[in-house]
Image (cartoon, chains in turn purple, cyan):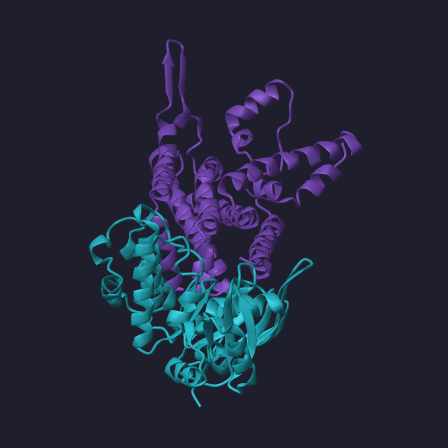
Length: 278
Length: 299
C-alpha cells in the first residue's frame, strides 16, 4: 500500500495542474470561514451572517459539510484527469508492462480517492470546530459533539462521488469528455425525475423513491440543504404560510445506497481494465 | 538445456472478424537474441502485447519463467518497450525512471548509471516532453534496463528515428546483447534482425512461417552469376554438374543455385579445363530480405 501511495503521490504532485488544483481546493475550503465576515450594516438594516446562528453547534456540522461539498468539483477534475491522462499518455500501458497489476492500478487510484476524502473530511471538521468555538452560542461538550453523522455522511458522499469520477475517467478515457459527462449525467437524473413526475402526477412519492437510488441524488440525500433549518428562515416561511419541516437527517439506507454505488464504480473500473486491450 | 523464459502455446487473438494471431507457438530461451520478423500487421505487437499483459488473448496459453510467478510479477523481471516511449511528459527523465523503480519495487540508486549507459545523464533533469524522439527511445531503453532484466523486449525500437538515432539504438542493443541479456526484438526491418539476432520467428498474417536460427534461415549455399561467349557449353556443363540445382537466365546472366559448397576459384578452374572461359563470374548469397520476401509471398 505504501508503494502504491508513493507512486500516486509522485504522479500527482509533479503535475503542475493537479498541484495547483489541490492547493486551490484546500484554500477555498478555508474561505468558508470568510462567510463569518459577511456583514451588512446599512443604516437600519443590520445583517451579520455569523449571528444568524449558522455557526451554532450542532447546526454548523450540517451547514459546513453542505457548503464544503460544493468545492469537490475541483478534486473531481483531478481524479478524472489522473485516470484519463494515464490513457492519453499511454502510461497505463507502460505501468502494466513495468509490472503493476491491473488490480494494483485500480487500487492505487482508489487509495487516492480515499486519501482525498479523508483529507477533505478532516479539513472541514477542523474548520467547523474552530468556527463553532468562535461563534457558536452553545459550547457545551455534549452539544458540540452531537449531529456528527454529517461528518460521516460528508466522507461517504465524497468517496462515492470520487469513485464515480474514477469510473467515468476509466470509461471515457478523455478528461474533457468525462467532465462533460459528469455534468450531463446530472441533467439526465433531472430529466428522468421530470419524466417520472409527469408520468405519476403531482403528489406521488414514486418519482422521489425511484430517484433516491440514482447516484447523484443518493449522494445529495446524504447531506440535504441546511437553510430551511435556520430559525430565521423558518420564521419567514411560517409568515407566508409554508411549512418547511422535512427530513434532513442522515439515514443508514442513504449511506448503504452510496456505498453500493461506490462498490459498483470501483468494480466496474476494474472490469473495464480487465476487458480492454490497451 | 537452457532455461525457458517465455513460452507461448497455441495462442489466438481475434479482433472482431480479424484474426491477428493464429495458433502461434514458440519458446524463448535464456541467452539468445531473438527476432520476431514480419510485415506490418502480421501480429508481432499483438503477440508481445499479450505476453506483456496489456492485450487479452482469445485462446491459448503463455507462461513466463515456466509458470513460477504470476504475470505481473514476472514483468518486474522483464524490460520492455512497446512501439513508442510512454512516459509522463511533465516529469523529468530522472523522475520518470524513479517512478518505474517504484513500480518494479527496486532501489532508485541505479537510475543514474542507466541514464549514463544511454547517454542521457546530462539531460536527467529535463522534462520528458522536451526530448527528441531518439532521446525518448533511449530513455525507454534505460527504463527497460533498470531492473537488469532477464529479458529485454523491444518492439520496433528504431521506428521513426533518423539514421544517427537508428545507429545509436543498434549499437546499444548490440552492447546489451554482448553482456548476455536475452533479447526479443520485433521488427519489420530485416537487416536489423540479421545484424543483431541469433534466432528468428517469422510471422505472416498471424501465422508462424519460420522458427529457428537466423544463420540456418540464410543457409542456402548461395549462387553463381555467370556469363560466357560459349553460353551453350556453359549451360550444358552446369546442367550436368551435381553441385548445381536450379539454373535460370536473368537479364542475360546465368544464375546457378548451389546444392553444395563450391568456391569461385574451383569453378573457374574446372570451367577453363573444359575450355569454357567466363566473361562474368560472381558468387552471391541470397540476402535475408530476398528470403523473407520469398517466405512471406509464397505461402
